Length: 305
Length: 146
Image (cartoon, rainbow over all chains, first blue to last red; front, side, top):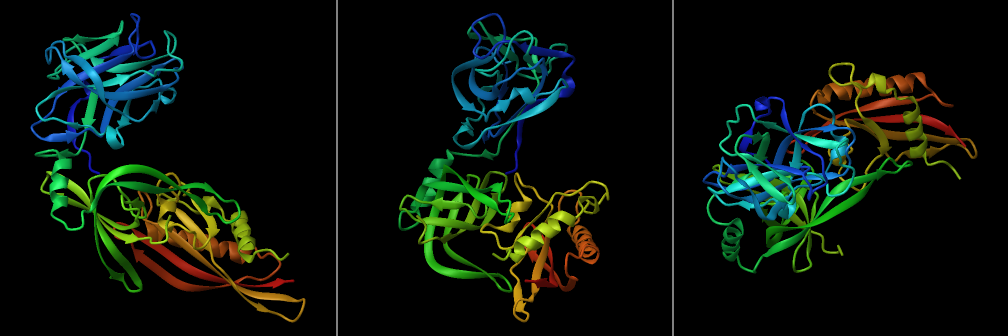
């Protein structure tokens, strides 16, 4: 999936400034445990998929840090700070893998954590220290920032004493990415699309993503492993037919799958009616620059449990 | 019990193939490769992606055997297929030839109890859409004593 930059404040702006996060999150003391930057979404709807922060470590901190997304309160660009419940949390990042040199660290938002943000709305993207592990004055994470000539339209904030505190003289180095969907909510759009087909095609399906596990010493083959998740897919069943790919290669097409969620060839899809399909081909479709989805040729596995 | 002939050839190749001779286009960075039995129960292309991220695979197929007089042994024809793809720093056709050259070197210089002959059956390129899977198939012919 092509990631589109929503907003950023480049690390080239960092003039030696940083936040030292010397407490596990959430901090109830004067020590900081998180840093954020507020930003304004454009007029199109974006689902957050990636965030980056400029990080390095001091000593040997341990534990899993996260990037998070919150709505913003107070005044944007002056003392904007996160508020309310967390909207999205990234996959875990092991802070012990940081180095003592500044690095842009990427945080991935997976599955349901790819929160669909409203257009023209203020949000805060945050780096939060681990909630467990070793974080103290001798072992901590530094988050890159700019207090010399901060030029981003938003502002940074930090978390200590159990509250967020907005700073109008500081910007945190950050990047936020996501594919975007213009117009109404995609689920509603897909439901409308789905209603145009007979037979009430399925919508919530179980995706079993195939990956390879340990390698067998005798055969050299790897064990197959499947990671299951729930994705939204319109499965349109049709009469079985075959498509010639090239001389000697045929694909039997039993159904068509339409989804915006990630899917790969050879993944298994189980729909709400107990049918299991294998994705034989996956083709990304881009309509202008607004909607991107995938069309899959699905082959039914009739004897698959 | 007689050894699985695939196992014998896999161990033979694992022992003698030199990673130093299997390099990327720059001629110095060694590629990641494995020797495995042919026809795994998953698409071979997965070996070149994800966490495995191999650059080159030698697949040992199923042999056909001709029995020699009782208790003498067998003449076996063992198919060995070399697979690779284009990657950053790797031109698939170049790596395929390096893999062939290394395979030939092993077969010609490391006989183990029998003289190995080989026959090159030719290139085979499969267009998988976004990826081309390059391959070449050899048949190893050797005499295995009982």
